[in-house]
Structure formats: structure tokens, C-alpha cells
Length: 110
Image (tube, rainbow, N blue to C red; front, side):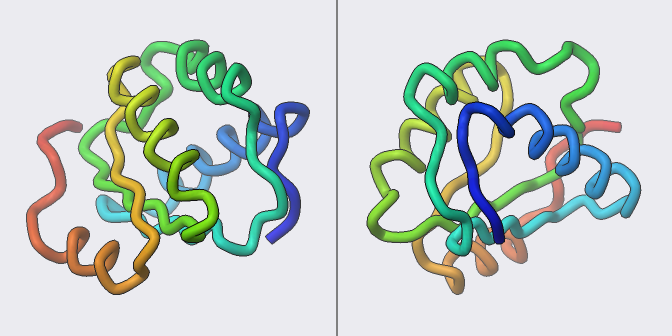
């Protein structure tokens, strides 16, 4: 819930890392359908490019559930992140996201 924009993207990303690393979970479902707004294309690009090396959790499988209206943004986010070495999958169907998480073991990592 809340708003997603270029101004708060770093804080949101930091909070994600804190929650995931603190939980010890290896499979994460992030449902962002309730967020208002999205990052700009440039904001998305620089967010994933400027993630501190060594801070990106490894061995964690993350599925992001997005609204159908934001399907193109989700595809851009997934591709931009993968190009920067950060891997997750975006879905517009909650059930598909959950099935993907349950379908395989977490990726190799720490």
C-alpha cells in the first residue's frame, strides 16, 4: 500500500531488503497491486543500476504481482533488473506468481 515514485524508491528497496533478509525466507511474493504510481523509466533504470554491490540478496526467488494496467512497466522492470544482474519475475496473475514460486527450489546462493 502507499505510493511508489522516484523520490521514495530507494527507501522502498531498502525496506524490501530488510524484510526479506530479516525473515530468512527464500521465496518471496511481493504484491504491488495496491501501490499508487510507479517509477519513471529513468528512475527504474537507475534504481537497479545503483543497487549497492553485495547488498542484493542472493538465493532468494522473488515473484512480483503487478496490475494488468502496469504490464508493460513490469516487463521493463524485469528486463532492466536482469540486465543489471538482479533476477525476479513479474506477473499480473496472483495464482501464476504463486505457482512459479512453488514450482522450483530457490536459486543457488548464500
